[in-house]
Length: 97
Length: 97
Picture (cartoon, rainbow over the protein chains, first blue to last red):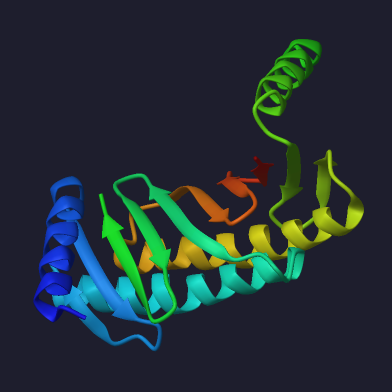
């Protein structure tokens, strides 16, 4: 595996998403923040609540309806912003737009 | 208030949403199902999990970030379907597409 290429692809993808989002947060599924473009307080609140609780709960809700199914993403819209949550095997990408 | 007009408007709106969704579930915020176009098991699972737990949790997550803010809607996409959850003061509309 060409680590440099993987890293460049990742940076490009992040820049693409960043061009459309106000903030990006990447957090592991146990809540460790890998990357964030917003302040620590907002990061901790969103990472803790949106990622851990909401994602795990949505995943179990999806499996309750159909055990073979899988959560792909969630979009949470409030009066002032939208949060896109894309859970993956090891981490969750959160874009605040 | 012209009850018949309110009822007709409601039926029209439901038909409009129904034309775009596979199923519609309307549930009060304490979990009582007012209307459903899907089977009882799926209705109970979605009403119970998606509406009560997810909505209340998303609402508190939103308020934690900004107490003046408010959850407008959630969109949950899985491999096989999408659920749109629109919470309101007294009830929550869920469209499965």
